[in-house]
Length: 140
Image (cartoon, rainbow, N blue to C red; front, side):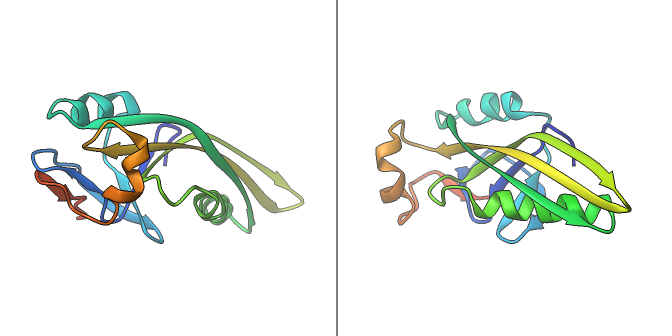
């Protein structure tokens, strides 16, 4: 996972013609195969949908016997702290260190949101219905 990683909640509604393959990575999240958030923004806006850059975010920390274990725990911790109404997250920063044989990782996550309508006030309403022209995120 690199510092420009994007994750979508499983089942996120996307424009039908937008093909975003990804791999399940954490409970309820799919790691998207995309260059960066700007690239995804361009692809989402092309069919008239909206990719919102939110100022809300979260962070997480984890420890483990390996750096991968510490990073996984930090990601799970940060993802659990995210507001459940937003469906996309961007991994902005990862720091890792090793002290006395124990690996410690910190992650900083930024909330993002993909939806068809332009108003964030309608996010809760849209979560309960599938708008026309929507498809769920694909996993491979």
